[in-house]
Length: 191
Image (cartoon, rainbow, N blue to C red; front, side, top):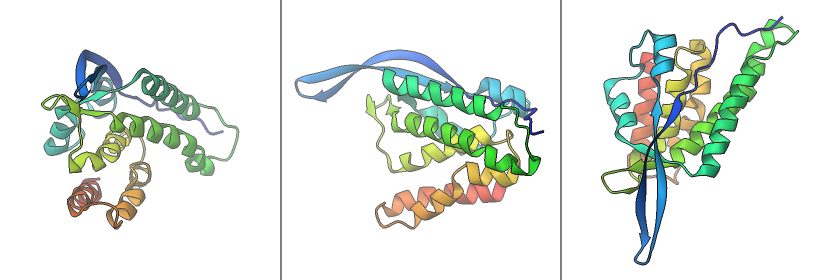
């Protein structure tokens, strides 16, 4: 019988404030800003300690997220479905466990892709567009999966293969490639 004895801990998305952003000279809109709160996960699976290097933890805490309601609903649905899939009792061979984790991995990836698209810089009062934005989805994925699954799966679930392909792409800048390669080196060296 295949039964996961661990729980997944998805971070809380905590409302911070509403903010007005200027889209053009005569057009503005109100966006809701959120923080990602990892405390419960870190307490449960990492004895309350930060899970990433100081550099990456600081980067994640530097920005908030301007998440539209439609994205928020989908993020919550995907995170709930991930936990649901993860906790299904399966009356099958335990050697297939990695196969059954693929839907969970996909839902979590979808949730963090949506979150990373909403990265917001309060200093500029606008969506963040820095060249390191390219790593946020993978950084969030890595932080989520770290200490919740075994190390061989951590590399796969953190999107290492995808990052490697992306880092060789001609469609991104050299600076973006550098950020991806630095994250890849960090994940490979310390995990």
